[in-house]
Figure 1 (cartoon, rainbow, N blue to C red):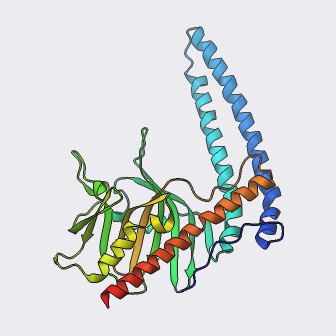
Figure 2 (tube, helix red, strand yellow):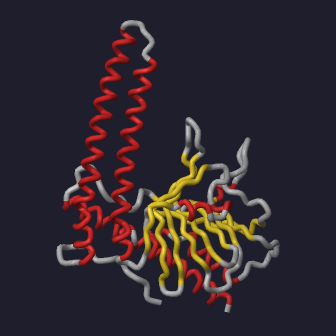
Figure 3 (cartoon, rainbow, N blue to C red):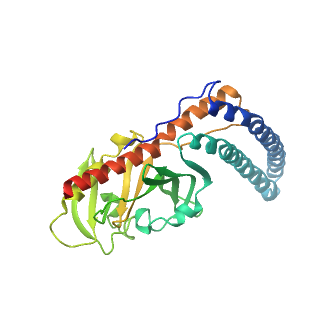
Length: 311
C-alpha cells in the first residue's frame, strides 16, 4: 500500500512556503507582545528582588517581595510557553495538511480515551500536538504525552509519543511492556499494571527486556503474535533511533503504542523569529511529521506479518 511521504522542504515557489510566509507577521506580533510582557515582568522581578535583599540586610521580613519576584519569574516562563503554543497552533495545521493529516494543539480528548494499562497508573497525564488522519484504509492518531507524579517534587514517569491504530484484521490480544516497569517495588506496584493478565514470555532487545502478557492462560502462543512482537520490540529501527518502545497493548480491535522519545517534536516559533528561523523550524517540523507516517507503516507491516503467520 502506498503511504504519503513527508512534504518537500519549502522554498519560495511551493504552496506551503507561501502559506507559512503569510503567517510570519502574525507570528512576529505574538513574539513582540510576549517580549514586552516578559520585559515588564523581568523589571518587576528585579525591583522586587532588590527590595527583598535590602529588607534582608536590614533584618526585616522580606517574604512579600521575594514571593512577588518568584511569581514574576513563573509568569515569565508561562508567557514564553504560551507564545510557543500559539505560534505552533498557527503553523502546524498548515504543515500537517501537506501530508494528509490534521493537527490540533489540544490532545485532552485523545489522552482521556487511552487505555489505563498503557501508561503509569498513578501519574497525572497531559498531552499536546495531536495528529490524526486516514492513511489508505487505516486511521492513525498520535499525540505527545507526559505523565508526572505531580506535587511539589513532581517526577516525570513517561514522556514521549502515544499512537492509536485500529486493526483491520483479527489480532490476538496482548500487552508488551518494559520488564522493569511492571516489576513490583518495595512499597508500591510497578508503574504499569499487569493485573488479570498471564505472563507469556520475555524478549531481550538491545539490552532492554520486555515482558509479553496475554489475557489467556493457554501455553500455546498464537503464530501471529510472534510476528507482531518482533516488529514492536524493534520499532526504533523503523521510526528512528530517538524512539524506543515503552509499552503496547491490543484488545484485538485496536492497538495503542507508547514510545519514549528523545526530544519534543514540532517545535516552531520564537520571540524574535525571522524568515530564516521560521523555515528552519518548518523543515524540522515536516521531518517530525514523518514519525506518525512511519509508525503507521510499521503497524501495517505488523498486521501483514500477523496475517501471514496466521495463514
